[in-house]
Image 1: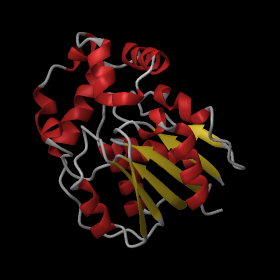
Image 2: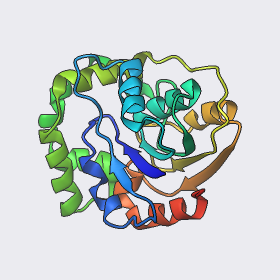
Image 3: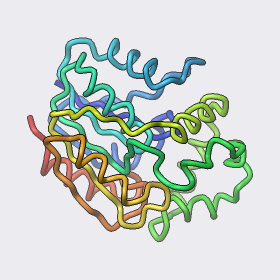
Image 4: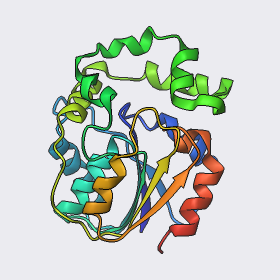
Length: 222
């Protein structure tokens, strides 16, 4: 068994660094970046993950956009998922930003002052180290692919199939990107769900890595 981390919409996994520095489980941990294929459909990304995992049992720790992938992996039931941890995730357009995001030029990420973007993402937990990490992630973005992911976010339809994989949903009270109503879909669709509400921003694993590491250790099922 191993733990797989699936990243947010940037797709690189670079932003997991603060969390990985503190998270020390007894299992192997693998960061699985999103595919750079021209086909950025949920189905294609899920199929690639399934092929990579094969028959090994896994625990998924997923952030934001990758919640869509984790749900679909559980729904398809082609790999052995022991447990899923959802951090700031959604199964429908997450907010007004999610709905209009498909129309915004994603290269604005290179124009918005780093200080402003860092405040939106990190709020009072912002630091020079996190700003530097954010800049590194932006510099590694494939803008063509991230635009396709934003379109997927804006047009995703709330699913209907219930999954029975044990799940933990972590909701941030100061999330500017994923509205609180998104929890409702998980409550309806995850038959075995535990909820944790944390005073934090959308970037839970970046701003509070030690607390999130402890939270995962508290819930993890080996």
